[in-house]
Image 1 (cartoon, rainbow, N blue to C red):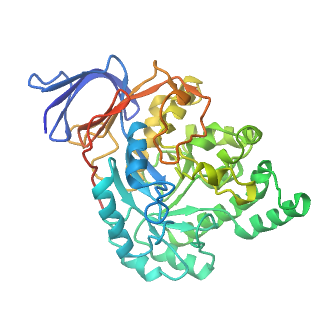
Image 2 (cartoon, rainbow, N blue to C red):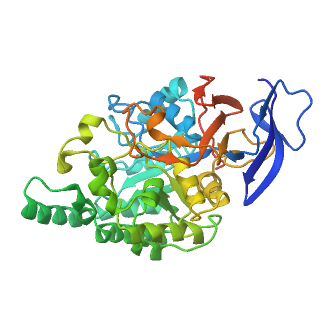
Image 3 (cartoon, rainbow, N blue to C red):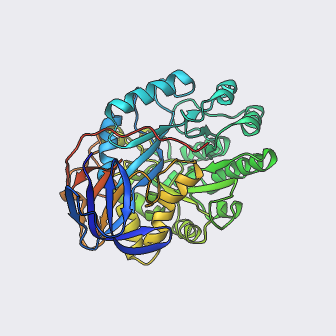
Length: 442
């Protein structure tokens, strides 16, 4: 592999911005400092931010079983174009990723087609506790538990099964927390009022604050009881923030995640975008959104992810109750966060902490997530002075649409390096080198 030098970068790493050159050799960061004299390729960053690529700890790439919506190949391309260099993919596909054979199949698929680095969750069910206990800690990033029904039939609702998972999981337990009986009661009330044509504006009332809090509180209670490592995914409410402690992720047993769309949209967007922003848990009020942003700043929220979950335009065009939940997000996630930097809500150092450093620490990712000499060169050049017109650029997810249509972001992902290879540059893919399976320091 050739030696590459990136000149005139503003390197954002570990709470600091440093103006420096950076040299890549044999896929790794060889030098942070004056440029190597023997570089075969030089790239002028021209003052753009050079950041560790985002490690997205929650995506749904739909393969196998739902390739009409997305594939590992298409969605990893969209991710790389968005500055995401590694992802952790969810188990609710077909067949579900609930045993070692399914994990091995996903690894084989990604090795053939993924442009980004990859890892996969082992999914929990009401009857696969023994598989969870025996999981190879290098083959799965964590154990995914649907404590609220979302898609598929992976709801784990037996308390004795949850107790067993929290008592014996060898890996971080990542939970989708919504209380299904509360949701069902809310939906029944909405049907009684509106019939079968319930408007999408009812979504945050059906997938309510109470449904989220009851389930999240149970997860935290179980984690404390069993001293389990718990990571609560895609939090959406101000009330849930009281369950989590502020401070750095290092040393925490219980951590929290928020997704980019819950930091950007709020309930007033439903009449405008309709099912395009229907997701589970639901986007809620502006007050909830602002509380999530505050929790990112004070450290109650440890990780920012996407929950990228594409569906076809035709599926999303159905009536509210029939339309599936989920949004394509990987291509624009970092741009959303930099928009919040421009708005003074976050700093770029906080964005890097929550999208790269923290997920690497939480999941014990080996030699990634930081701009450090000797680490893999998973990097993104992010220009805060250049615009991205969503309507004027191709949507790379297979579904072909974005909830951000009509937006012009005040930044641009200029280049993305995966394992030291320049894969995406100036709006085009310049390499089809495949990513690697993430390794874990466990």
